[in-house]
Length: 110
Image (cartoon, rainbow, N blue to C red; front, side):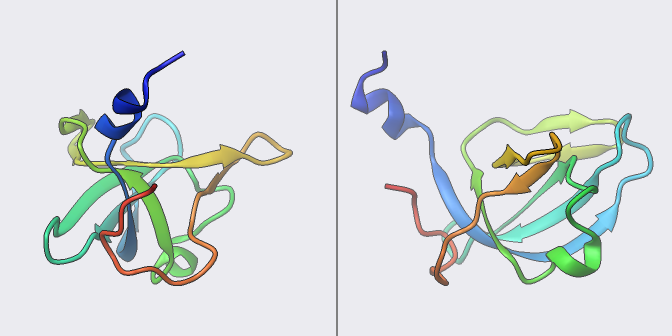
């Protein structure tokens, strides 16, 4: 069990994918994403192993949820600055978490 204050340490925000590119250098099939988290946080980049359910063309413009307060992590030649969140679908592929309705970029998960 964790305390509520432990949960508050994880900064989960919504942002809009503004660019996406294939990431052929990754060990597993992945996309490079650039996500706009609004004026206060800005644009962060990440990689995500989501190629079974998303293409660069289909993900641009989608709002997604991500942890924005992890330290940056080097993934091959790419520096990841946030962690996009998702669940496995029935086939074990990741489907991203997104708000049901449009939310302002940078809105925090409560």
